[in-house]
Length: 267
Image 1 (tube, helix red, strand yellow):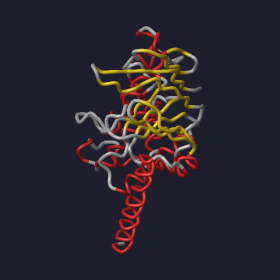
Image 2 (image 1 turned 90 degrees about the vertical axis):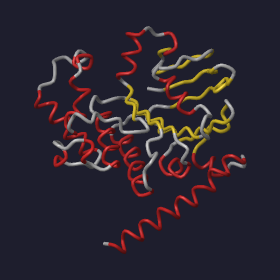
Image 3 (image 1 turned 120 degrees about the vertical axis):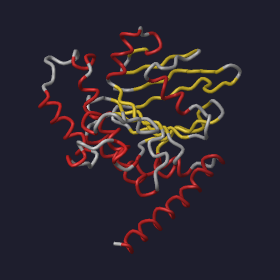
Image 4 (image 1 turned 60 degrees about the vertical axis):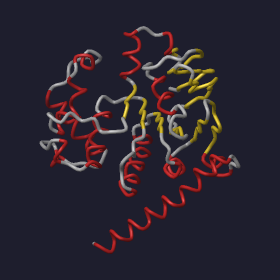
């Protein structure tokens, strides 16, 4: 299972967002895509599931050319890709249980199974996915507005995991979170990727998180790839933009350390 971008270019009007971008995400790998705002990170992610199509070039998922698939074939690809959005996007009118179970109950998902899931099986799946994101059964009957924002993010992740995707695609998963919750979410991404043996692509601007959990880091800048290397190579990079990202990690790690000390003192 791999994702391959082959000389992909994409423009919106006169603004060229991607220019001849080529890279591969290998099976089981955690790839962080970093870059400043507007450098094509989320646009790259949307190409994987065919929400956007390149102006030129090809995108391959498991040797299937996503750019040439019809709507039915794209649906098959999307079922294998779990997207975790920047915001939880939970349905306020549904309980935590029903939010996580939502994808399991759709006719489109049920039709992919040998036999439809029973309510008992759905309940077992919901509980097991909540356990994976370190949440218990005590929140099953609560509604999104009754739990913290950090918990909502984890419920959203459990909902994504419920249909057992082979790929996890994260779009700025730690936006709006404090340093400690950010650390917890990133640990979850790493643990889930390895435990479930899925391939993960994380769009972010957070170099500190990338250095801790990524297998490889892709840095986009001005429509092209500035770097695509291991964490060790990224740390050694002399590129000014990457050095700027690296310098920011010192400040973020200091914030996290201070928050942890405060929490210990309060306990």
